Length: 292
Ligand SMILES: Cc1cc2nc3c(=O)[nH]c(=O)nc-3n(C[C@H](O)[C@H](O)[C@H](O)COP(=O)(O)OP(=O)(O)OC[C@H]3O[C@@H](n4cnc5c(N)ncnc54)[C@H](O)[C@@H]3O)c2cc1C
Ligand code: FES
Image 1 (cartoon, rainbow, N blue to C red):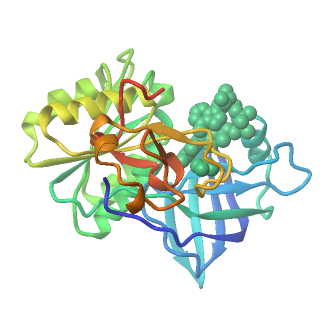
Image 2 (tube, helix red, strand yellow):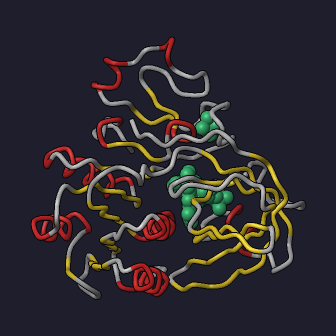
């Protein structure tokens, strides 16, 4: 399992300080929160609870795409798509609006893992990897960033990724399924082509659709390259209480499962809880044939 674990979340008032259209059906949101909120790790997420009148009862999970501190306050950044009632209501919040934020939640990327970091993003999965690229740069480590989407228009956040990597000395490689930008093909095709040219050993940190993450996990397992994948699940509580975010454990992890050594907010022998044991899992942790 991944090494990084944090359970020091808090529920705080957050204020919208920047909220803009980023094209491709996505928006960027900056929320100001109290400066003593525990510092998040890349790959962790928050639950956002909208102010009344609120069309949805439950908070909505969102990956942290950036974090900075200024004048005793902290600002967390998010890249999101308004897809349903909750995120559409979020999209309508003006600068100055207040909401509740629960976090930071879950287990982030183990960026301290040895090896040359390869960041693999699919579509809006770029969000936590923008944060990971910054964190690696702060630790004095360069990253190689592979960013893919179905079409050029869906490479959302490309300008931001380019700017952050330019600041950090990282390298950006692009691909699209239709060849409209970068290499034609998937992120895994790009990985296959680039990996032999990169200084090993490699360590992968990825986020994107589950189909892409399953392919990255299989590639990592086949090549003996550790791969850390940020998963999603429909979530209610985000804290391990509701048992609503199960992901199937691998046979290896089921065999090694020890109930006595498993925290109560984790899952059972069959299923891991995405919100507490993840959202970042190592490729060996899950049964990729049964991940939906
Ligand atoms: C750990 C985590 C991190 C996330 N980070 C981001 C992010 O950085 N940016 C972003 O845009 N979204 C992110 N999401 C997804 C986001 O939480 C959902 O899109 C949101 O909850 C949908 O709420 P809604 O009320 O707008 O839509 P709903 O009306 O609840 O659902 C609209 C549609 O989206 C589907 N859906 C809902 N939740 C999910 C989900 N988790 N995964 C896939 N499909 C879903 C529903 O099945 C439905 O088809 C993340 C989810 C998780 C679990
Ligand atoms: S969302 Fe409630 S247990 Fe994971």
